[in-house]
Amino acid sequence: MGYKTLCFGFSCVLFAYCVYSPVPENIEEPWKVRFMDALIKETSLVATLFENIGLMKYGEVFSTLTTVHLTKPISDENITVIDTNFRDIPVRLYLPKKKSKRQRPAIFFLHGGVFVFGSCKISGSDDLNRWTANKLDAVVVGIEYRLAPQYQFPVALEDCVFVIKFFLQDKVLAEYGVDPTRICIVGESSGGTLTAIVTQLLQNDPEFKDRIKAQVLIYPLLQIINSYLPSHREYEHGPILFRKMAIKLVALYVSEDTALLQAALRNEHMPEGSRHLFKFVNWSDFLPEKYKKNHVYTEPILGKLNASYPELVDSRLSPLLVNDSQLQSLPLTYILTCEHDFIRDDGLIYVTRLRNAGVRVTHDHIEEGIHGAMSFTRAPFFLHLGLRIRDKYISWLEENL
Image (cartoon, rainbow, N blue to C red; front, side, top):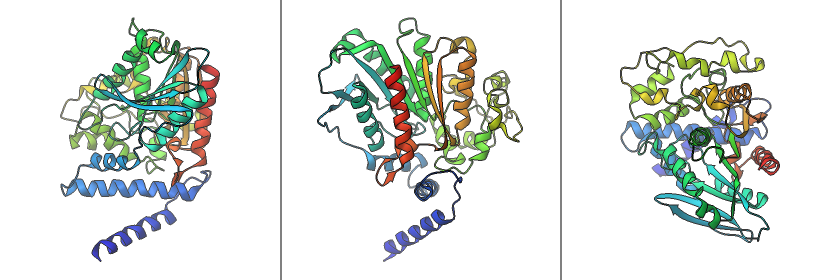
């Protein structure tokens, strides 16, 4: 009886939140968005409670729930799906069955989850990669990189770099019938972080320079320097991705020190001597006027954090920190941003900086968009918006890859 009462009480709280939680006026299917937003916030509350009583760490709650949505490598009439390892790193391959008259493109998919949870094998990612492989007649490689806090920065990045370099060997490309001139890296959310960094690193590596034809960043996270961008203030409470959860999970990728989290929430986490980096993420210089609104630019406060975290000034964690000369050589780029997204401005700043550097950029901004929408393409978490975003991304690849 106690368990049933607890579940009933939880359900009532969730329902009440759905009824009274505000969402932006132009969001489609607002009841679905309210429900998903409430579910995420309730999960964060439970995770905080479990961590406080020593039952389970905050990130573990999210990663445990991810396992509910994992899929088996089930092939269909069009695509062969295989789980394998490239050396020690798990990958999921999507291989078109029909014979091709020419070599196929290859797409590396880097999933989101704020470096702490997520998988290329969850239902949303599996559906997307299967669809991509079929529509584009492409080999798709989902990378199951290791996650924080067990594996902190830069392990996830190193896993992705290793898999892509391994696959780009001539013998591996030949094994899968891949055209070495048609290689693309795709990432959503924190997977977009990794995509941007991997692309930068490979372009700066003489052995792999110009091997990547295109990069795709879907509502990407691109910096942790300043936690008070306009979108951080406007969407502090979401929907879907909200300030405290996002910053806490990103902090776990660097350290489990709660002092770092608290400092980042106050925008006081950057060390002395890092002011020269602020110019790369100064939203007052790079955001289009319509997004500046009445916000006033303020710099992060320096030197408040006693511990030293050199990762905070590393461009392998914040790809917006590279200078313009490094951006100039980047490949064809597609960036999709959503209006109602806590990290909207990261993508908008990168669009401006890439264009200023002469990079060919296609930018789609979804006015009614929310963070993570492309993951919500299967019942019960189904949004028509997710399908539209998927189709935009696929259409761009069809034309450019």
